[in-house]
Image 1 (cartoon, chains in turn cyan, purple):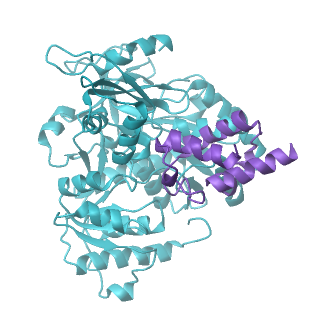
Image 2 (cartoon, each protein chain N blue to C red; image 1 turned 90 degrees about the vertical axis):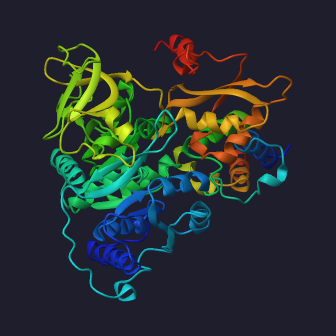
Image 3 (cartoon, rainbow over the protein chains, first blue to last red; image 1 turned 30 degrees about the vertical axis):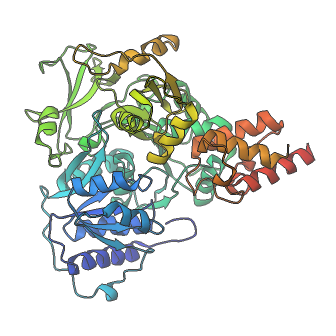
Length: 481
Length: 83
């Protein structure tokens, strides 16, 4: 359901079937990609599961991305169809350009009714190994990485999460996370699998409204990233709202400050707080910290979910003793099939059946995982992962910029914000405002830098690669970490 | 300077990076047009509190008060009137 519109499972099922029939009628073959450019809404849900029911690989895209970026992904995944949501037909058309991809505008939930589409959907045998979805993530190089997940991947991950959150049909979750990211995707799948009610609240501009909505709807659950909770805590006391039904809160998407976790617990003692950790490459969920261990294991992201193995190894892949920091590797039924059309990138992270997460961490004597930063330079800001190379590419297109570097710098609210360093060309007249206006034209809002610095030179390795971590080192020291 | 003028100038400078007055209409939705996001709203509130000395309560943080230059200006005027 969304705002004032309530949709039953029976209606949702009919809408999904209508989408599936429409796709089949248009000639979709099983395994072909159906991209989705829709905001978090009931029509998104119908389009996503309708595409799966038709045997397609569903590829949700960021509705806030600029058309050239969307077009790049459509070509990358060789999408046969693009379903666009209300108000997004124009950017969808611009994104498709000359690509061999057909646009299917979905102007509202239920626009495609079964009678409209006609014909029965012949049963499609869905096998666990069949590809189900591609979720795009940011890599440090800026090249798109499409995480290909099978039906088996998704089902195993969903069942594990439903079990530890003890989700039931009486649960009601307020869903504020982007659907096209693995965390939001997982919240949707798990609650629908449990037959729960999903209250869709796209965007998170007004925390007071979110809390009022949770109270009015008798929400039993809420999921957020650290920035979501930091925003909720920044202006208000959570215990001012009648949230007696609230049973569980989940947090993933980067380390949340212990002080914030304790404040949430103090103000919402009725709700169990689940710290979780995962990765798109593993369907989303890898570990969770049982709420009853939250205080004595504060700072840990917990232990592996059902059927998943986790170990911390050295660079050669040898397991390390407890409390030694190394590379976090995992193995289990949620680990992706690979990166779409990128065997080279796949080989780098899938080795001998283990997924190398790129995260550094240690396991304590009881097997609880503590993360210690990332081996990569990916920027984590709010719920987003941003490739520094993508920002740099945009900056280099601005007249007067000779060299550019981007990196994440610590931010109390968002975890990190984007800072850029620019080397102007000789005699160039470059101002901060001009740089930011250029970024705004070419990037979605969350990728626009918060700080711009002009400098004479960038630190580089012997081979000429920018040493981004060297740029932020002094700041790390200033802020004590 | 009238509140609306100051607010428009602040948003043009900090979110649209321009002084072109035509870049923003007073009635345009700041969220729907993608001019500001959830953290931007917090920054705007901080600006209103600093610049106009008004106190923004939880209940005030709703789109009816904050989603366009005209709404923000009217909100600031109301707050000042009761202060």
